[in-house]
Length: 136
Image (cartoon, rainbow, N blue to C red; front, side, top):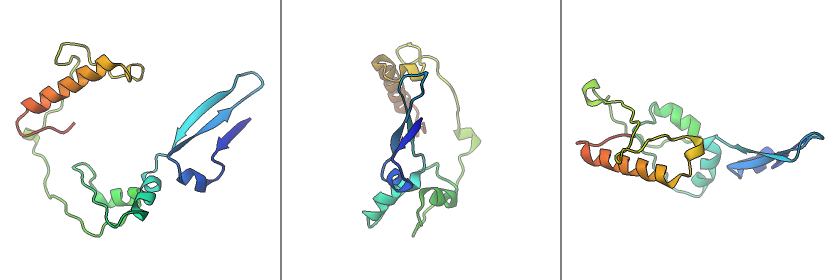
């Protein structure tokens, strides 16, 4: 049998995630976590409690699509009319961090404090050394 909690879409809207329980005659009890990945559901409650919401980002363009996805109507929009010139762009990958330790961000290493420290120290060093800033 497969049972879901919450039972109704209205209950789902009040939570970002919940669980489904799966049982069969052949298997032990298993739980599957599912998440609501619709930002408008989560943002709806915030908007109802707020008089203003300021949305800022360098990567939400086109704003019309972002507004629809967030379920918002923007009263005022200030948007830069620029594109980064190719000469100002560098894309790279780093296999080792600042302390020469391997950078391998996998699911199995998500809670490894040494991995997090190596990544954090490396990001701090790169952002300190790159004139004009970086976007990660």
